[in-house]
Length: 437
Image 1 (cartoon, rainbow, N blue to C red):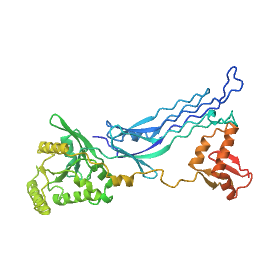
Image 2 (tube, rainbow, N blue to C red):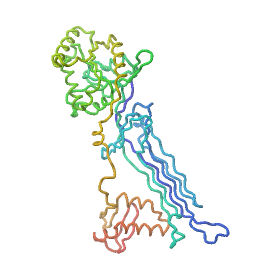
Image 3 (cartoon, rainbow, N blue to C red):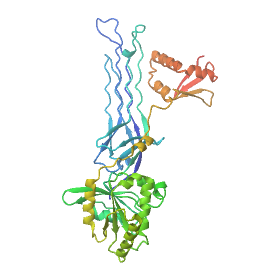
């Protein structure tokens, strides 16, 4: 049985940039050595790369945290720290990456060897060489490295199969797949549907082969979330040819024509473009008594519904149990695949609606101020916290630089307007200092 994991939730954390160095030249015959602290190296990014050899997200069930390495610290004599290598994480072709909090699509990894940086490494902190000025030729100021991006991601895999088997539960899709391919799905005498798509490689003749997926059985209302719902309809989006399997026996008490109409209505309601796929009707269980009569009734109803102007779809009579009629079905399927181009995986309007575009929203304020329970004040916000993390508090000049940056942001003015008094405690993360009015 092909293991298949539909979704996975993981954490990615890129590497922190290396800290910049505070150093000075100490050379013979150079009495006033200037600053010589180099920059830190860049932190390693976390990069997703499409791997055609993978077909499931099963690896992400056991390994959920991916961390990039930090950059090296800057050194004396102006030497930069070494940048860390990026962490390459292999994902199956057809993986959609979403932000777990917002649900925004970050990228759709569908091309061979496609790469995307899901978390960017922090830049290295600047060494004290960078802060030298005519007024301060020997600064004792250096930055710590910038923290790397940290995200919780949701991965979704839409099966990249050439051929999809669609139909109601218990019409024989799993049995059909098991006899024509190397897939070994669990098959039982029950009325429940397959819970996950089973994938198998089908060999036709000596050269041709294609991937076939047994799509979980659909029910009426699936496009609006009923039953197994949209989570499995989306697997059908990427198949190029659909085999519509109908039960021609009387064992389940089903009406093949009503099943045929219901399934096609679901496909059309979910995505109109699914009806552009070539579709072959597979009349299954033809070894059963009365099957021929039921097939004749089906053809009559279908012809009446289509009218004289429309061409009847192709119908193949097969039996998964006795393995009759399968070679002709597979040969015709292979021919259709050769004639059918790969469909766009999304239409452009859908992609524009679904993909998140960053940088166009109104810029967030660089900080927020809260009142703590003990009467102190707390500062938070990505920008001010990043500045705080990148400040080296071992050097007074760095501390003074941070104070000037906060003042330029308007922190002092905001605290004063909110009622902060001389001597009040102000906190950023675990750091605490006194407010001086």
